[in-house]
Length: 408
Ligand SMILES: Cc1ncc(COP(=O)(O)O)c(C=O)c1O
Image (cartoon, rainbow, N blue to C red; front, top):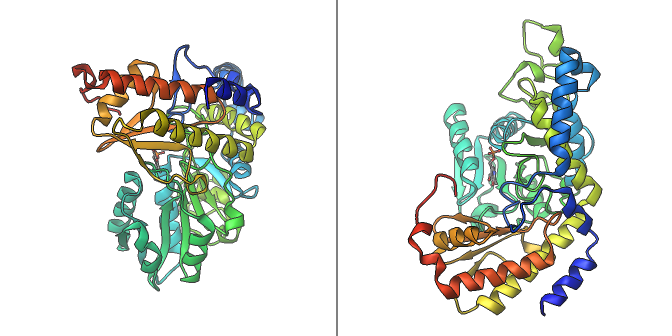
């Protein structure tokens, strides 16, 4: 393969027109859309309109007139179409961490008598931290086991198996249908963290029979820094699940101002406080782009970009100390690719200085994300050439690239 072949792939790419929907600084190859998605061009204008018209002129009437009060469910219904859920099964609210707390506690409420929450070692830290906090508060037991011990660890005390479908470091993908079936066969619920799935893979929650899920709005969904997250509760659980954060927006009738909490019987029971309207407006712009492109086309291109990157790195940098961390088979992975390198931190910093933005994950992982809506095959090609040049010239060893920043 040569660069002309990559150009031909770009010319034939059915998603190529979406690149122009994003603000991308010139000279940058952005391989970090899996961490913070870039700004859609339409977002700033939409935020301006919501601020000036809906907030500025409509004032409090916009809760009804501009549909603010339905925004968590409206955005949720859009996400539902991306992750194989039905309308009314997803709400947008809070952060992924907070939603995980609500749903893990909700899982305990759905499985009375069972007191164990099961997850894998090496899961994204916030997931484990949140479950630790919930266990301390509720008296439940948190069991953290090696990935290959998860199935055998499901027993008659397991209330929920809580896994991130695509691992944040390695991109290894759990088989959602198989894991869900095994959890349920043991009487437990399956709770999925879809932070690296939503907007990247053609996920089918209901096809897999999943019970509960959470996920992130600021990565592949391009909702902006700190965008609100989402929570999925399968329709069959909605009447019975209890959120521990019984705020007024989860009440059956928030504006009846009743003295006692009475949970909504639908997905609204997962809401807690007043929704962040500006942030929801920004997220919806990102979601509309996703829906226009369609999850199957996004997954297909994303995996093709990953495949090209892995093959090119091995062809061009094979003798330069990079070791692929995570699956090579496309069906077993998500849309980021990680290479271990003994000087990984300096390598990522040197690449950023050359305009190739990826990120570093301890202890030695250089991680590169392949967001299909704005990346080109030629970007992958060019990034690998720059990677080779950095390694061959030793730029990554420069002292200025060894200084650790607060956010990596
Ligand atoms: C798998 C996973 N879960 C959760 C989070 C964090 O979610 P939040 O910051 O919305 O709480 C991340 C962030 O990278 C993540 O990768």
